[in-house]
Length: 176
Image 1 (cartoon, rainbow, N blue to C red):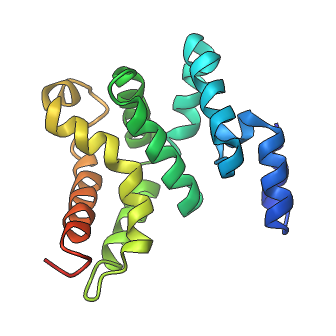
Image 2 (cartoon, rainbow, N blue to C red):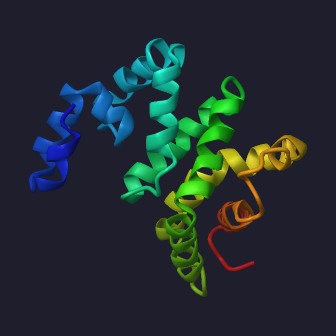
């Protein structure tokens, strides 16, 4: 795993090659497009089949994303897992709301500020994407979410952001 070195590497191409050489780093941080398939296979074939792997995903993915690219990657994966691994996805959001509430709410506030006229969807979209799986679960499995003691109501800020970005994208990016 090369993750500890990545923040110290100034060359994006080198960082991409290191992520590609370590599928686990790509999965936990964000892979370059070339490494996405390997990262997804590692998740499906190894991590999801072991309790420790599931705990690792929960522990890492519950942290507030460190970059827009990381938010997009993790949000996309959580949304892909939403139907087949619903409990894991809810575990991630519950852990996020228990352990990193303020960091997530801070990202949401900054994203919402960017949605004032004219809206900056490119800045808000990654944060909204991270919340997309929970927003969709909130529509389809609200009672399941409410049964989790760690979910509370703080998640609604992320759901509202996701829905606001969704509406703005549907209207072509203009304030609705």
